[in-house]
Amino acid sequence: MVLDNLGTSLKDALRKIANSGKIDKEVIDEVVKDIQRAMIQADVNVRLVMKLSNQIKHRALTEAPPPGMNSKEHVLRIVYTELVNIVGKATPIALQSQTIMMVGLQGSGKTTTTAKIARYFARKGLKPAVICADTYRPGAYDQLKQLCDKLGVAFYGESENKDAVAIVKKGLQETSKYDIRIVDTAGRHALETDLIQEMKDVYNLTKFDHKLLVLDAAIGQQASEQAKAFNDAIGITGVVITKLDGTAKGGGALSAVSDTNTSIAFIGLGETPDDLERFDPDGFISRLLGMGDLKALVERANEVLQKDDVNVEKMMQGRFTLNDMYDQLEAINKMGPLKQIMSMLPLGGLGGASITDDMYKMTQDKLKGYKVIMDSMTSAERDDPKLIGSSRIARISLGAGKSAEDVRELLKYHKMMQKAMKGMKGGAAPGGKVNMQKMMKQMGMK
Ligand code: GDP
Ligand code: MG
Image 1: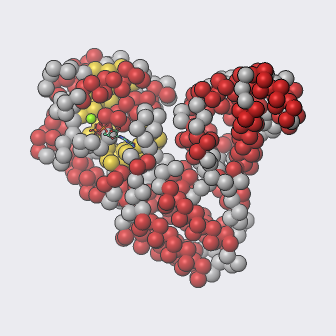
Image 2: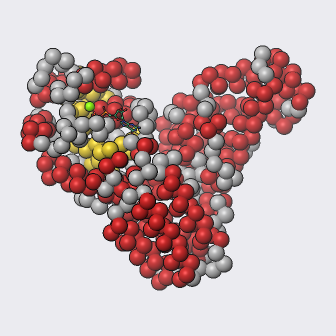
Image 3: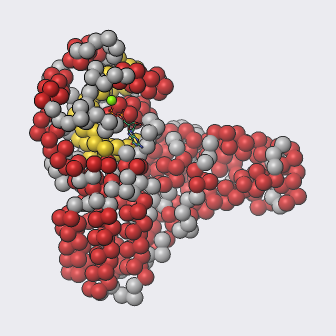
């Protein structure tokens, strides 16, 4: 998970509330101090941290818990909502035809993010095309073209032409039949006059629905300065914070942007085209606090699991057989990196244990191996894996040409998933919404 350290410290602070005998000023002061320390370590601006702590203190000590909520739940909810406030609102991005211009300094991640966003819309069923307007950096054309080719995304560029404006003009004509048109522009080391002029000339070519500024999370609080500068120069509609996977200081960039009059549209969490997420303040904070984000999981699942693949609701209910697990692994595989999906599961579902690296290493190969093993089982065994003792393991491994160890691993994995599914069932309210109170109870936070 992104911002691991911050998440761990916040979880520790919240546990203090859960474990305290009763909520009084002393407990609140201590927890607020812990939260302050955690936020400052994540590079959040001191002024914002003070504002946040005062809000939490004030509300926790003056507001009465709403009916049906005890004082601990009430304080937890206050901390949660105030944390959501500090990261602000997300930039609205409609799922409809639109043109998008990507801007930002060199190396911030524009080109990578261009490909990621194209993939994001393709997954939503819209047809994307990408236009390369970076005629400044050598190799820019090849980099973007290769990314697009790999993803099967339409690409327009002119490798020999240095006139970015002319290329975009032609590119927009050539790609007029596509739903989503994304223009990847050149960056410089700083926001210089010629860069501003080029951006202006490009965006004057058409009415762009979005001008997204790409910022590297590692710049921390400077994000606010850059967002302001780009906004003043060309008027941006939203920000993408990249490389959140690579820094413990990401809290700085996240909170700094929301403190300007712009907002965050997407966050980048890695180098592959799937490592992009719509920024969702609620989901982000609940994951940070270890409550999982069922909303994001269910949303993402529904995108891929159209029709008869796997019914997510059903998956969370009832028995979870080996057959179910296989269907589900296949589906998850389609959804993207397992790591991302797993980080969306509520921690409570795994009995509070953190997800081990082993669980992340679920690859296509492994799936194939599992399939072979499962083919050697009887249908009764697949339906009720508890039947499988050591003599059956020996028979199955022999039949599948795998080791007994492999079979045990599969069974162990199934058990883990079964446990996780049970947790999800408890945490999901009707309609896939996250039931905060219930989830906190599961975490032992009541
Ligand atoms: P541009 O100059 O703004 O177009 O930046 P690029 O898209 O070429 O990216 C610069 C470097 O950052 C490349 O090595 C990318 O792989 C890397 N990068 C971009 N986004 C992310 C991200 O979200 N996480 C990580 N870890 N690396 C990223
Ligand atoms: Mg680039």
